[in-house]
Image (cartoon, rainbow, N blue to C red; front, side):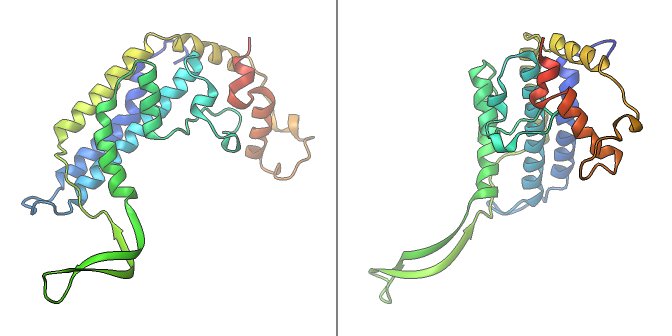
Length: 242
């Protein structure tokens, strides 16, 4: 990377391809001849794994956009009490929020939202109910309103035409659309600036910072956050400053 910057697509593809391949592997194990509406556990697992890859590629993309100056820190880390440690760029926005923000920037990957909605319904749709329900009386002609509970409900079905071809399509589409947009930004210039600055930072031997007397500093690795706070800064602020 130091000698030649990769293309945007090359920079991003590993963050989703592993998940896409695993999603297809899971789908190949899918049960055949299942009755309509039956729970297809491999299909569900495939979608969840694939969308985890989508989350990762979008997190990396937003980190790159931050380096390029296209988004602000508050766009990706909006809770002050969840600030990443010095040296790290993370994106804490949910999948819906990332897709919406990309849309504001002119990057349309909204076709994914249908799959996200299916996933969210299966993962999050659960409840405990105390209240009235409608039941037929003994004559089977009239309705009674009967209080009862608890009733525990959760999604146990999944109905979506999910195929390996769709996984390939969405993977390539996401890579193409996002990398094309990244190529219109100055992310390479920003990345080179960071690399040049970090190469000029001082190197230390362990004895150089042995004088630091703080709890937990017995191990060398525990001194890394101190150095990052001093030379890198939260939000990479020292590296990004002129």
